[in-house]
Length: 299
Image (cartoon, rainbow, N blue to C red; front, side, top):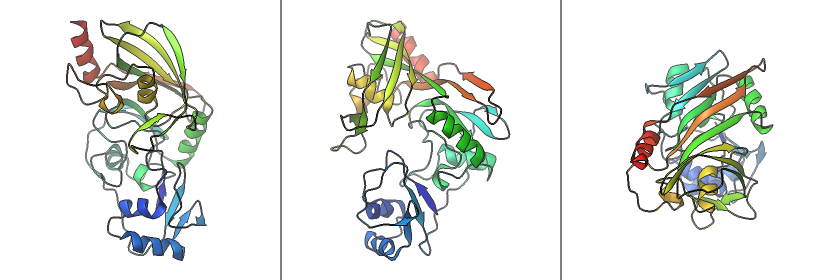
């Protein structure tokens, strides 16, 4: 079994993380298995105290470890599909991939039902086909790879900033500038592991912002992601005093209209088609959550 660590799981002890992941095994047993060499990190033996990092590949060769993600017949909004990939419009409220505590009802469960084994497995069983992800309550466009070659192709294009991802967001307060760039490093909050924040020792994070419409106490904006850190848009906008509407994790405060957490949607996506380089561009309408808030603000 292979597990690829992402930003949300990093900075935990290896034995503690595996104890969460493999709940049928005690932490002490897992520590012994790590010492025996039954667990490899980046193809090397490790120690139970090793601090896992984003991008680490953990290979498990522990007897009786059976952890399977089941296909589920969940409707998918497929915006585009060819022999190598698909573009999915993920609804708000759905996890992109399973976690150590939630293994059903995710986009991956739905993808396994629709595409079976025709999904890349570079990022492990929990993230079959997943190249990039959206937060649970962020809706919108997401690329899915049907094979490892297309996964590698699109990942390389993403690293080279050849993939454009633009988001709609409604934020608190009126933003005066028409266009600006937020360039602030983002890292994990040491006191609240579920949160990210702006820290000097964080990873470079760049967001381009354009104002689309101003309201009395709010602003509709488009955000173009230059980098793709965990919670990047939400952290960046909160850091300048304009948290995303209803984003209680990052300081929105009391709501005037109820929605499922942050009003944020991935609504534009452009990328080179594997493997001929033709540029594919997609744009979707604002989702019901965005429309609901805009209607309220317009009144």
